[in-house]
Length: 428
Image 1 (tube, rainbow, N blue to C red):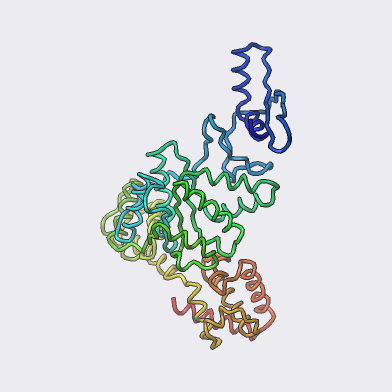
Image 2: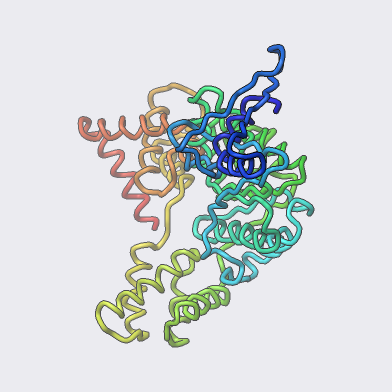
């Protein structure tokens, strides 16, 4: 065999089978030896087999399932059974319960086309984008599940950007494991990467994914990416990576219209076996207009109220419950709105706020914007930093802590923050 890795792999994964076969064919005195040809180190090295009782026929694990030894080497040995990898797909996310409407027809149709011929269509990569709760993860995983149904032999893997980043850092911190990490991902047939916008300002991770992307795309493998915004609006990512995101199809998931919202509710009601009148469905669909997640959440809340209080699901109960949800979640502020409010309050331009100037008044305004963004939105630290001057998550956290300290010690500073916060709340 070419390297000691193959010897180690056989010893760990196939020794029971090899020993059993050799003893059966050659008798109990049969011996197993490996001739390993190590490049640039002279001739072959012979490793006599030593029986180890702890060896089992194990699969190479998905990187997040690794043991303390680090990421397992994912090479496939020619002639041996292909490695089995858990695709990390949820059985709840499939095309049957992904309701089609004008808001998602393009993305859904492209997904079905890809599932029938992954890596061989013009939709590579498929870049799905849209606001939170509109079904990006659902659609991406539905494509993966459909591929596994049509092509059981293909290796499909779903991973979100945060987990990919963690795996990359683990690989970097363990000697000689980065190559294993890259090789693992380069053997995937259909790679689904969720929330790719979280790679912003993470140069090492972007570089690793760039090489993985190139290898898969050139090998005719399928890439499916999701983000909360289109490629053209992604900040903090290398241009060479952004240009590749535009190679295939960028498909937006929009807020579902009234008829689509009703269809989504009816589909969930049917699947859950619940008896709810059309009047209740119509009312919920007319009140919850933001996203699919909140729409389904309202239905779950209604069912919980009826079950726990032993009440029938009536229009009156739906009105009482839905009105509370709508009042409590009228609208979510955006980081952009907070920036504008801060700029207006301090009479500065957005360009100055996002600039690299170290003037005290600008820095302080920028810190307040980061503080309010973390306090009043669900945006991640990385996302906030990217939108406010292209800063990293550590800068946002430092700004947040600085503002917290100043609020406690500086009365006038506290009044400024409270005034901006009051203005923002009044706009909801």
